Every structure is written in structure tokens, then in C-alpha cells.
Amino acid sequence: MNIIIVVHTEFGYVSNHEVVYEKSATAGVSEGVPNLVKIADKLHAKITFAVMPEVVKYFPEGIEHEIGLHVHSGWEEFQKGDITFHVGDRYLRDHCDQSLTSTVLRDFPYKEQREMIKTGADYLEDQFGKRPSTFVAGRWSIDTNTVKALVDTGMERDCSAMAQGSFYDFDWSKLPRICMPYHPSEFDYQDKGTIPLLIVPISQMFHAGNVNPEVIPIVGLSWLKACFSEYYKQGMPLFHICLHSPCMTDPYFLAGMDEFLAFISKHKNVNFIFASEVHEYSLVKPFTMLSPYILGMNWKILRLGVGPVRAQLLQRLL
Ligand SMILES: [Zn+2]
Image (cartoon, rainbow, N blue to C red; front, side, top):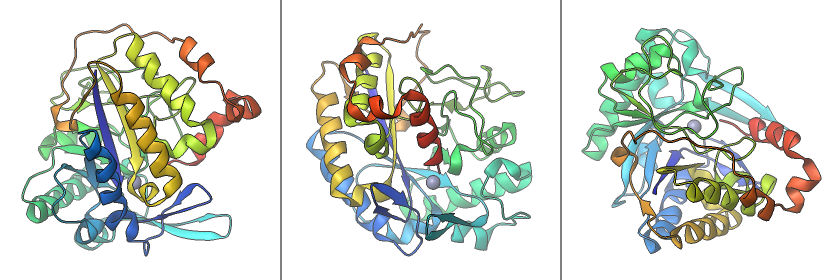
């Protein structure tokens, strides 16, 4: 089984076991990145850092992992409790025509999406010496125009798909929960087709939610392990973990990630790869396997119930 770890590399800090996307918290990159690398290197795990152009100057030197592109369009202020923060990318704001302030990428016309992707990829290529070929959309927000823009700008794969999820800013509701990489159709990015871009969906827990250490406070680490076991026991070829770099500045999440990766690496025939090494696998027929989850049942899940857990997970998206 192949494992990929894709990191949305952005500014922020952790407060009350939750990432706050505060632009002045540059340690979200300068410390979050090397902290994760330290954990990963112990296990020879490979990391794909999907980097926002605005954070490039804070990305540590000498990191021998892979660089992808993470695009947050627009510029908006958000409020969470008494915390105010901004979403958007200063570099792209300064270097691209953006007719909207929306932080939902798919709100933008094709031409502007294409310009953001190209400008970001050009800049990362200039700064890191290698052109990124993996893309992650901020707020998981893509549409058919994004797919077209990605192909036009030479991107080879997208890691923004949250199978079954839909919210006002994204829609992945057509994908089955356990969904392996596929080429999208030119008419609908959620249908299979022949577009030369590989959509690599994030692994989803039962009954929903990204496999991401940031959900440990909500569902417990045992639930993430259960999801891995569900995929592993039925021979799924790929397991895709996502996270945001600021969570790796916090000892609680570092310990959780460390334990999760150690658990995964104890299994036979597990192979950590870069996103760029993912390919299309032969047809699989996944099914929901409840036994790992019964074993992984914990007080967090029992207290909240699966439905409210899903609502909490959706609130944490960015
Ligand atoms: Zn992001």
C-alpha cells in the first residue's frame, strides 16, 4: 500500500487544539515544516508540501521532500469566537488580476484561476528550482475551470478532493467515500474521463471526514487508525493523509502524528511515496468495513455521535 502525506503549508498557530490561520504566525511554516520532517525522517516517510506562494520566504532551506502548489484566492476576513484572521495569499493578490475578493477559488473565471495557478507555479519554480506538479486548492474548492487551468499550466495532479463532502465553497459529493485516483471528465470534474490530470482524493473516515491529525481532538487517534486499517485490510492501493503545517507547531498534534505514522509503518508492504509518484491503480471495489471502527470506538465518538462529528469536521475546513 502506498501512503502519501500532503501538507497545506501556510501561516498559523494552534489554539485550543485548533489551527488559527493568522498571517503573522510565520512559525506555522518556519517551525511546522521542520518539526514534521523530523517525525517523517525517522520512518523514511516522504512528505509533499503544498506551499502557498506568500509563505515561500519562510520555508526552511535544505528540506529534502517534495514541493507542490497551494492556492488561496482572494482576501477575506473571518471571525472565530473572538479571533479575527484573514484568508488569501498576499503574493497572488499582488501579482495577479483578481476581480473578486472571494476566497472560494471556483468563484473566479477561468482566466483568473489560470493566472493564479501559473503565477504561483512560476514563483515556486523560481524559488525552489523545480516546477511543482501537484496542486491543492484552498478550501478544497475546484471546478471544471480549475481542472482546465491545471492542465494548461502543466500541473499533473490535484490533491483537493474530499470525497462525499460538499459545502458552499466546494462539491465532492459524487465521489464514493473510499475513492482511488482518477482522471476527470472534461464536463464534470467528479466524473471519470480522459483529462490528463490525476485527481487524488484524500482518504475519508467512516462515516465522513478527512484523514488528518487535526481531527484527533474530535474523533480520537483510534478513529484515524481504524480508517487506515479499513483501507489496509481490503487492499486499497493508496492511503492519503492531509494536514496543515501550523498544527505541527503544537506538541499535542506532533505526538498524534508521530504515533499515527509509527502505527502505519508497522504494517507490512507499506510504502511512503511523494504525491508525484502516485499513478492510476487498477480497478478496486472498496466497501465499508466496520470492524476496525468498532475496535477504534472511543469516548469522543460515543459522546458526540457520528452525525455531530461530521458537522464539527466541516466547520474546521479551510
Ligand atoms: Zn489552505
